[in-house]
Amino acid sequence: MATISARATDDSVSKAAGDPRCARGLDWIDSNSRWVTDQQIRLSEIPAHEFDEARRGEALKELFAASGFEVRTDKTGNVIAERAGSDAKSVVLLAAHLDTVFPAGTDVRVKRNGSHLVGPGISDNAVGLASLAGVARAISESRIRTTKTIVLAGDVGEEGEGNLRGMRALVESYGSRLAAIIAVDGPSTDHITTQGIASRRFEVSVTGPGGHSWSDFGAPNPITAISRGIVQFSSVRVPDDPRSSYNFGVIEGGTSVNSIPARAAVKIDLRSEDERELSRLEAALRDAMQSGVNSEIAFWRAGNSSLQLSTRSLGTRPAGKLPDDSPLVAAIRNVDRYLGNRSRLERSSTDANIPLSMGIPAVALGGGGKGGGSHTLDEWYDPAGRELGLKRLFLTTVTLAGLER
Image (cartoon, rainbow, N blue to C red; front, side):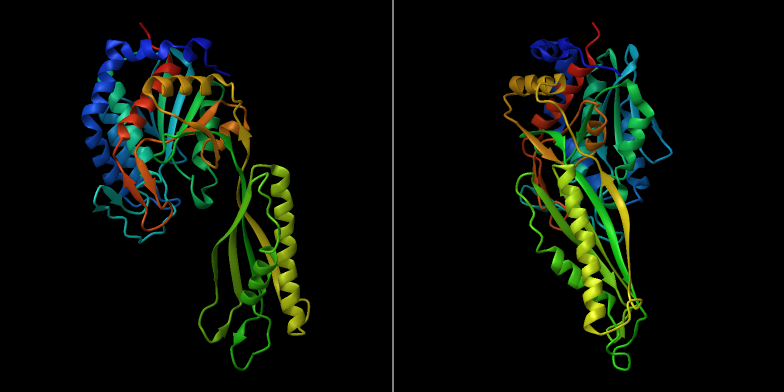
């Protein structure tokens, strides 16, 4: 596996920043943050719901190509831009996910509310994509040459049921060449995400005979059965340490108000810092949903075959943790010191989960500015201070990739 040398983590950050070539890149960021914001708005207004990211990917591809990167789209749908280094066997990868949680038909037009930009996906993750475009331009304007190859990627399948398929494909493609991965996700510059939270996602469905609400009253109802299971699972104790969570995110079923449904289904997200706790929650979920079905059957004194339960996995995210003394963390800490930025180590569920679970040095960083309301229609972003995030990404990339003299 490619590695980050010790030279990349010392006070050479200030020397790199003072290099005339890097100085040009930093000056470009200071003068063009509005351009980056304009690209963010443009990208955010291109719908990119699950499994339909191609249009947004094409727009990002154009931005990468305009900065002089070699650009391609892989078979998974990732948009990949490369700038070759002198060592073709070593790669620094920056990735931001293209997709959003919002379904087709959502109004994704960006509105202004004072200094805030408001729109679904404007922070998560149009800010990450625009940051990649900004870093690409800063690298191009600086005309630097690096030892390691720099790869920028807009990846698919980070949200919802995407199961991190884009990042999985990138890691498989570059393999042992990967020296470091930075997932650019959201705006915040006050954290370095070094631990990936494990998650498991399921769809639980219940099927039955269905019928008319009047003439077939008394037939077991799949919606009621699922509701009983939800209530029972919701009483399961979830620990603060290891921090864990669950969410019933989508529930569906039935055809009309006066029909007993023949099918109902619910989608659940389970998360934990500890895989063993996650397994406990999964077992409790399965037991609760089966109990809900049994209770519904017993209540109506129906036969045991009147309702059928099935559980389908929608995806898993493995856990992983970067050591606190990792050269990658040290490099980012040095960049933060140079920029006067204060940050803390954080835990989350991001594209970085995949490489972290495989022992590949990886973190998630924000692109700068401030945001809130993620995964809601009122999601917002304030670009004030975005230059800090762009400089942080630029200097970290240059430091890790190594300047060629």
